[in-house]
Image (cartoon, rainbow, N blue to C red):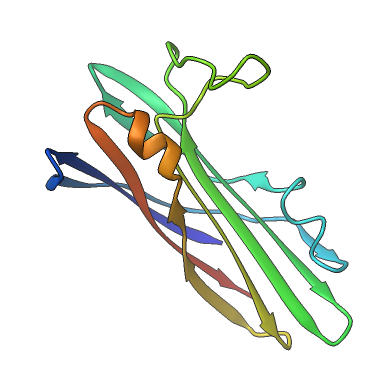
Amino acid sequence: MTVTVRLIEAHHGNVSKLTKLCTVTGSIPAYADNGGATRPHRREIGNCTMLWKGQRLPVSVEGALAVSDGPITFATANVSVVPPDAKPGCGMCGPQPLAASDGEIRVSGMPHSLQFSLTPNPGSMLNAKPTVWFEVDVAIAD
């Protein structure tokens, strides 16, 4: 899996900065099931960091792939960064990410390559000051 991560910053509703953070490549788990194993069994790949308020923060990049009868192929990926001072979103929730993007794709057959983009988490976009989010492109090759 190859993932390209860009950080978008916005002020007063206008994009003010676009920064390419990294392109990471690594192996992800591949399962033979109905896609249910992809989310909970994603594996972290590569090494990506971002500079935020003078601190170098680790950016988590994860993914997984599943093939089921039919054949149908499922793929999922997630990119997120949680600063050390992140507050919980609720009483039972863990620290909320500064920025997070998530996505999955389902295709018929067993393709030799897949490409898809991740969707930013709207909650993290609203809570971040200034407003930031990840723009992420994912490619998976057999």
